[in-house]
Length: 164
Image (cartoon, rainbow, N blue to C red; front, side):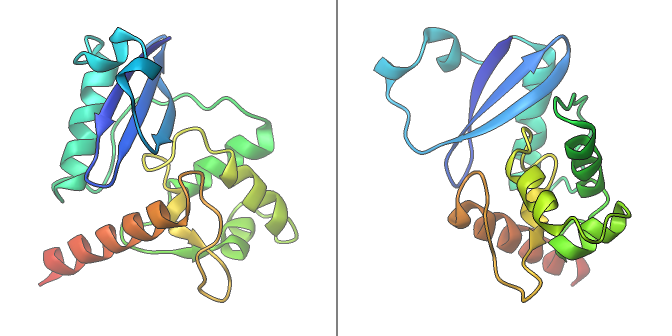
């Protein structure tokens, strides 16, 4: 597995690639050089990691709304179904966990949807941040609520600018 670190406007993100697929995106609070191997500090030599960094850069600058990266979900059938449903949520919009459960034809599986989303190995690219509570509250996110709020606001702002 190859890895690299991408420095976003909101914090560091570790990207992991395996066999030509992006398999994991991890949020990191703080990176200390003594805590990581040299490979993380170098520019990604791998094409998928390079493309992932480029697309993230374009996403954060407002020049990309749909990622086009080869991804490979590792999870149960239910988790993979839930994560695939996330890909259909339009940029700059949000849905509830209930709406996501209805989308996969499992309207009673709201808690299971929340649990699956919390295990999404490829956040941002697979936009679980676009799923919010039925009452409109932000709840749960692997990177923390501050990341979720940042991503939702970022997309709303870019969408507003593009529509103006």
